[in-house]
Length: 269
Ligand SMILES: [Zn+2]
Image 1 (cartoon, protein in one colour):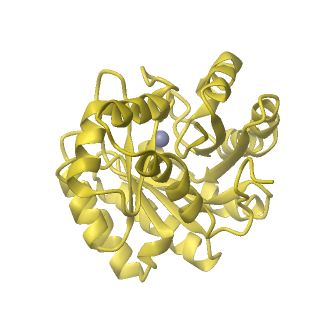
Image 2 (image 1 turned 180 degrees about the vertical axis):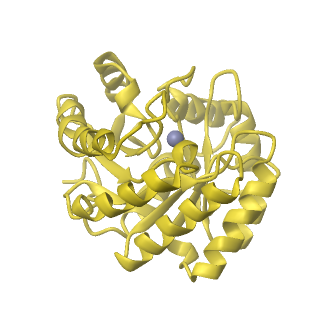
Image 3 (image 1 turned 30 degrees about the vertical axis):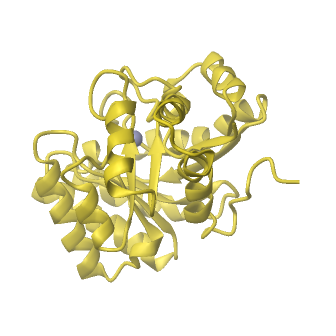
C-alpha cells in the first residue's frame, strides 16, 4: 500500500520511525510547524526551526525515499504572545519560496483567547497575501466546538477560499460543520487519546470520504507513526473496498496538496 501522512511532526520522531513508516508504504509526509515542547522566547528559535523543517528533515526523510513537505507559522500554543507573533510573521515570507513549503500552518486556536484569535487572523491575512494553502489546528481542549466556530467565522471574514483551507483535528461534533462550509477536514489518529482508528473509521462511514484526510500527528506525546496504516487495516477489516482506502490515504491528500505547484505525486513514474 502507498500512503501519505499529511500531518506528521517528524522533528519529534526518530529515524527509526521514518524507516518503519517507509516499510509500511509511506511515500510522503507533510510536517506542520508546531510547538517545541516549551514556549520559545525569541524569533531566533523560529529561524532555526524553519531551517530544520526545510533543510534537515527533507534530507532525513529522503534516506527512506519519503518526500517531506512542510508548513510554516507560529503555532497556536505560542499565539498568545503578540510581540513574538509579529516578529515570526515578519520572518515567514523569507521561507515561503523554499521548494518544500506548501503553505501556512498549523495555525488556529489552543485556548480560544482573544490574543490567539488575533494571531490566527494575522496568519490568515499573510497566507492570502502570499497565495498560500492554509492548515488549521482546532483546540484539543474542551472548547473544540467553540474554537472551530470562531475559526470558521474568522475565515469567512477574511474571504479565504474554502477549497484551499484544511481544518484538522476534526471530531464527530465538528466534522460536518467544517465540510458543510466547503473546507477540507482532517482527523488525527492517536492510539489511546483523541480519535482512535476505530472512531475514525466510524466517522468515514457516517460522513463519507469527500474532502477528508487522516493523519498520525506523530507529535511529542503518545502518537503512533503507524496511525494511517492502522486505519487502513481497520477499514479493510470492516470490508471496505480498496478504492475507499486509497482515496482516504493517498488520493485525497494528493488532491488537496496538488493545489500547490510544488507538490509532486510521490512514487509516480
Ligand atoms: Zn500538529
